[in-house]
Amino acid sequence: MDIQANLMNAIITTIKIIFLLAGGIIALIHYFQIKEANKMERKMSITLPAAVHFSMTVQLVVSLIFVFASTIYLFIF
Amino acid sequence: MKNKEFFFKDRLTDSQIEKFKLFENEELIFACREHWLPLVFRLLQTFFLGIFMAAACSSIFILLIHNIVLAASAFFLVMLITGMISVRVLVHWSFHMYIATNKQIIEVHYNPLISHAINSVLLDQIRCTEIDVEMYGIIPELLGIGNVEITFDRPTHKEEFIIKDIRSPRTIANLLSAQIHQVGNSNRQQTIQPLWARELKTNKYRFIGDVNYGYSS
Image 1 (tube, rainbow over the protein chains, first blue to last red):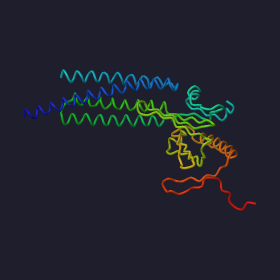
Image 2 (cartoon, chains in turn yellow, purple; image 1 turned 90 degrees about the vertical axis):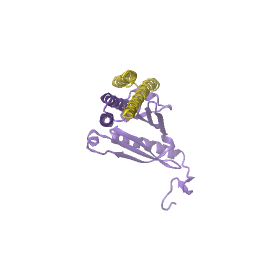
Image 3 (cartoon, rainbow over the protein chains, first blue to last red; image 1 turned 120 degrees about the vertical axis):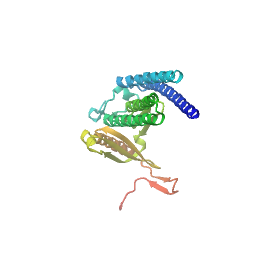
Image 4 (spheres, chains in turn blue, red; image 1 turned 30 degrees about the horizontal axis):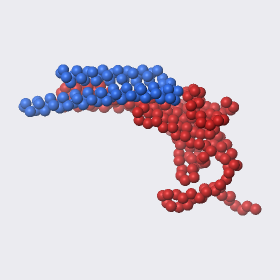
């Protein structure tokens, strides 16, 4: 019984770590995406619509919140 | 701009187009982006697929591990990935454009962190054999959205240049065929040099040039 419970705990912890890593990677991708898009805007003198900028920023903020929440969930609960 | 009536511009400003002009006396024929409707369809498709995947992932966590917090995390993670793909699609649409001048046809597309390509075809270096207009479906037919397929016959191979999902494809095809015909005629008058080209795959020789049929005196 203990083995089964330990195995389940190990699986849950692994999934938590995977989620945290995935969230981190997504946040990084968002950051570089915003940076690259801004660079291309200047380079090609094309202005992206304000809605696109807004959605990119919101995505970055949400992914950072996800990383923060997953970190707390991993270490505290 | 000399020929104002020859000019078709769709959601692009002059400063955006000027960047891609390479030659002197280069006049714009058209500059356009993909229509917004295919973009909306792609975004809706991504959104519904994302919702489905998120629901599937979270239900797996609920059924197998009986952990609601992990299920919610999985749902948000999949939705984050969906959002990332959606933003990427939006940015790609904004940077994807077609520009045609009397010297060249340019396709610019940029996908952040994935690809950046500028394809340019010099009109005086090619011979165009076909310009096709394709419009499939009720909504594209009603809104006038379609593809323009240009087939080029280069000395050694054939190649297609597809201008996808644009507004008024018939007008654009007419403008292009007029321009390509004009460039082709002026080139033909300058030099007509027949050429034998060897095809690498079949190892056969192909004659490229004008052949006069019938009797000539």
